[in-house]
Length: 114
Image (cartoon, rainbow, N blue to C red; front, side):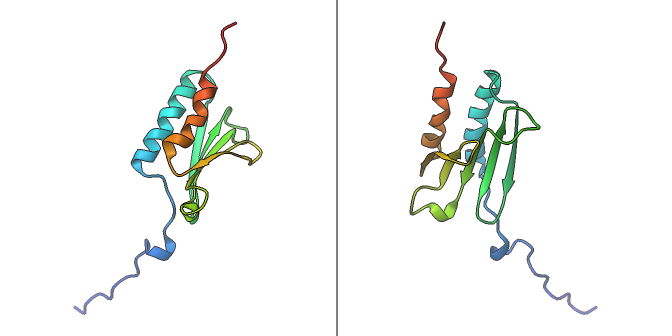
C-alpha cells in the first residue's frame, strides 16, 4: 500500500478566524445574564470572521442588534482590541481590557427609584 500524501490543513494560519476565548465569553455572558435577569435583553448571536469576532445583543429576536461587542486584534496597538458598538454602529466604548469595556453596561443596570 503506497503512503498517503499529506492533506492540506483546513485550519491553516491563512484561514484562521478571530473568536472569543473561554474567559472572554465568560465575561460577556456574565453581563448578558445580568441584563436578561433585569428584563433588558432577550437574545444574542455571535459570529467569528477573519478580522473580527462579534457578539450581538438583541432586545427581541427579529430586530437589529441593540449592541455589538467586537474583538479586532488588528487594533491591538492602536485604539484597543475590544469595542462596544451601538445600534447605529457608533462606538460607545473601546479599549484594551475587556472588563473595562464591559463596564459600559453597569450603568444600564442602575435605575432611579421613583
